[in-house]
Amino acid sequence: GADVKALACDALAAEKWDEAIAHFEEAHALAPDDEVVRGMLEVARLQAWSARGVPVFRLSSLVAARELAEQFERSGSEAKSSGIAAYHAGQFAEAVQLLEAALRVQPSDEVVERLLEASRL
Image (cartoon, rainbow, N blue to C red):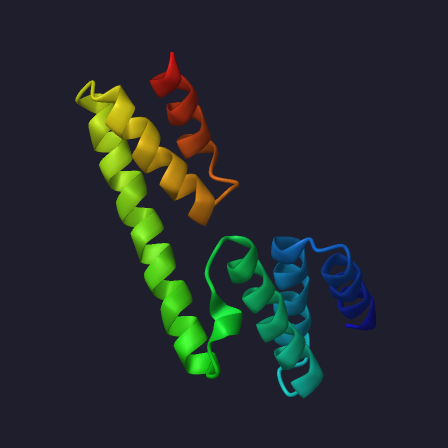
């Protein structure tokens, strides 16, 4: 438990948000009553959303921040689906725009990265 917590804190300090989230989620699973871990998990999530362009720190409510992030993620999923459809329809300029938007939401999506490269050819 303590080792996972330390890894999570190290990742958070290094601004490796997704890694921090994964470690805090593991620490939370091991100690669900640990309020510090739960709070740090929320911090890591907020930082990750902010890094992806979601203006969560402008809001005064954690619930509103979560809702905004969920809306942002839905828009990324929609952009990915539309981008894939545009790619298959041969509409490569449109595919590039949509896939770039999807990649801003989920920067580590390998499928989107590959399709984006192919669309630019």
